[in-house]
Image (cartoon, rainbow, N blue to C red; front, top):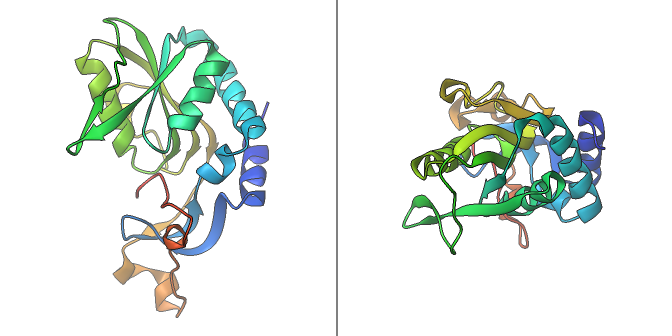
Length: 201
């Protein structure tokens, strides 16, 4: 079982959580940067995090776990394993989130939507809409890290379970106090061999 403090400590050790001055893929600036793939590449830690979420969600009677590609594919699979359910993913086709590859959601099927890191929850909201359009029932959303400052799905009446809630400040570049102090923002995801932060601000 991996609690919030243990998760963040492990993420720092694996450089999946950086603290400083960063430019996110959205162009906004932040004092924290999450690259959950660097944490999730370790099956033991990913599995422990998934098992913790599964325990927290055991009363939801989950029948299938769904995550958006690419960032949440690995974690949603581990959560599905921990819940003893199928684990599938949505992906974009011509800019629209959709279910492909023969994956199906049965009418009334109880679905858990999983992300790695949530900032606005935009991708997960798209997944929720896809599931609902197919007749599935989204019983909860879950993530490793919630940096949104709340529940982005509250207006949809969908509860959110996060292993860690992290306050990460975000600014427009023109208003960034770190820039005004003379500090230069870095783009960790732009270095060779890396990809950008999964959760867009």
